[in-house]
Image 1 (cartoon, one colour):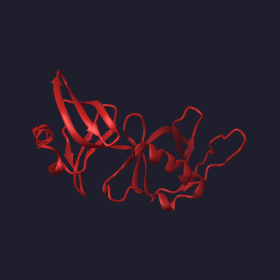
Image 2 (cartoon, one colour):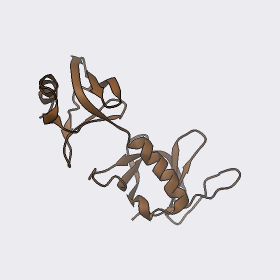
Image 3 (cartoon, one colour):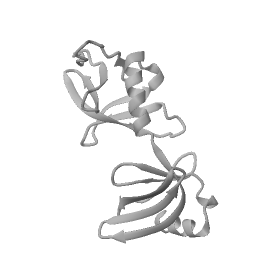
Image 4 (cartoon, helix red, strand yellow):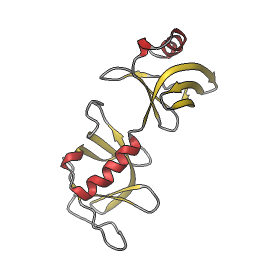
Length: 172
């Protein structure tokens, strides 16, 4: 299990350098989450792993190339200072829009443009032509757009007929 240590809060808010393999997290002035261990530091993003029914467990910290820098098994096992940093990053990563209606899906070269109604209001987003909506454990369909935002259809069968036709045209 990867352990997170509390970030030292100094006037400079500098990241503590450790060589014992422990992971240190910090939100820097550039707004990014930075992770450091064994003398290596990288800007990382939090990605929730399955099962989605346990959103505070199994968090992958990945660099800009999508390579895993660290795996956190449980937020609750993280010391308080780093836990606050991780929880903030998790809140940002966990924003999922809930789709209630699909108005249209247009395909162009290499891109699919979705026009949907979400609980948060109308949205338009794009997916790669080869990226397909997927069924998720616990129910529903998940769509990830080209920016990495998530759209969840909680009850596909409860949607209006036109929405179901659009959705099922793209779900395998």
